[in-house]
Length: 519
Image 1 (cartoon, helix red, strand yellow):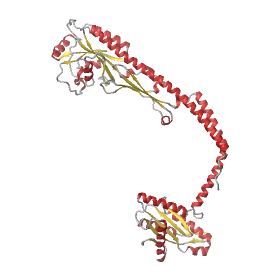
Image 2 (cartoon, helix red, strand yellow; image 1 turned 30 degrees about the vertical axis):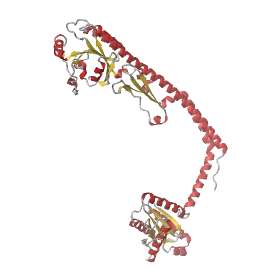
Image 3 (spheres, one colour; image 1 turned 90 degrees about the horizontal axis):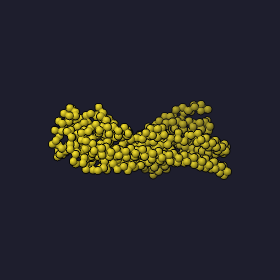
Image 4 (tube, one colour; image 1 turned 135 degrees about the vertical axis):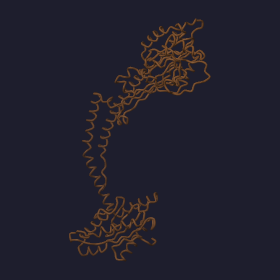
């Protein structure tokens, strides 16, 4: 039966509909994606501009504070406190303003005693390890130290920081060394603060002009380290907390020369669904802020969501496209019904070509194909298999006595019983007349095949109900093993045939394994 041809008009109509819908959908999606990508670029640049403004502000505030320290009296802590308060209130992202003084090691004890007498009775110069418990290898050859003397605001939780030698702070020791005799500010790595949270410090050495007479207290001395402590989370722009910006993931890192890249802050967008990540695009950008002391790299990511597309006007267009799609099935349904009928007929023809019409078992052609598959499997994996030949004993007498209709009933019953004793990977086929051939896959030992043969023999020997009454018969089975007895279908079948007739010669109803040499 020849396969029907597709109608050219149907193909043209189908292609036209599908092409139109695909083009319109693609155009709509592309325009929407481009719109969101352009908006993403604008949002990213606005966020970068906000962060850059804060980083530039940090340097400006530090420069102003350094100039103030050069001019203020060495003991005027009140004026310094007022200046720091005005700067911190104007720029709330600056968490703390601090000052450390350069002090000769030889003068340390006298200076500590002086401050205890005039300033704080509990003041002491100490290593950072004394309040954190973290070990730090200090340079024994140092001649100066940098105790922290001033902090604004004077937070109770940071009180223990007074008097800490700046160079003993593990994440600041290298930064302090870089800041000395450097006219530009230097940025520290990001660290966890003593009172909690992430931060980094912007440092600048301040030197007073020579010639000023020291006051009685001489609190700030001639050389200081002006510091701004900036909480990293405070750098996140306020607008990023709005709903629109909350869908953008932001990760900012300081890439300062001399320090490893450290994370400043990050903001993660809500997790997208698996289908959204698979189908919808993901925008990524990396922008750099070329700040002299705080060079920063900011990475932006936005995963588009279904909610970005499902707006009223877009939904209307999608509904129209969906309605247009209904026309295609209406046009093609009758054609595809005919195709289905043709396919069923083709499958039936293929089935009849490879199966026995009476027993529905594979015929010799399909069996030969299964044999080739088993042979290739043995060649690749070394898994041997067995070929069994089963012949019904005295079947001709049943045909002669009861007629061919009863004989056919017996053949069908025997075929079903044989198939029922085999695994799904095994094959039983009708070889012709009352003879069946069985392919046993993955046979490790001949005894395994012989045991299967005995099960088949027992099943066939059970009484069979026919229209002529109960019929009893047996079968004789011969077995050949690949590759022991050959690797060719004809050779193995001949060996199994010889074994089967040996069983018949010894009284029939027997299972025999070939013991000779097949030729």
